[in-house]
Length: 157
Image (cartoon, rainbow, N blue to C red; front, side):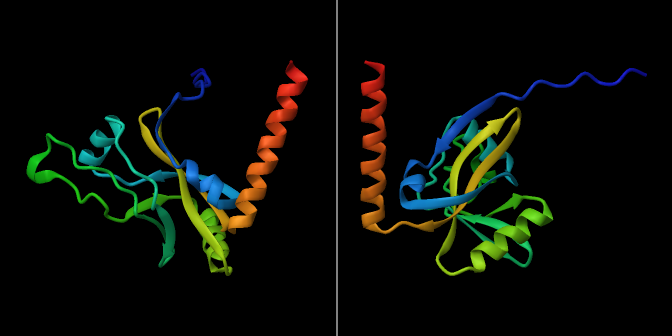
């Protein structure tokens, strides 16, 4: 029997992105994780509805959970609808959960949700581990990015 042909990379359809997370946190590590969802949650995500602004990750009893991820109710599921802001389990490898737990145990470290998207038919979530930036660090980062933009503009034209 011939081997199965290598499948091309599955297309990504972005649902929501947390733009403030990269501004507010100095991210050290990033993970892609699966997400355990109910059917009405997936249907709501297919409509492109999700809010990531207060979403963060915690490790409890050896399992990673995302809190604060808001997926609005699906209009057509009636009594079978889900709770909008319930904790949802992340699907990660044991080594990744252990690394995440060790990082979150360090003082000042946080794990935030960066994006939620479809990879093929599966809902994936991108999380980042990092340390929160102080106000003066945020200003310095903006100055650096403005300077880089000016240099790039000068080199182009």
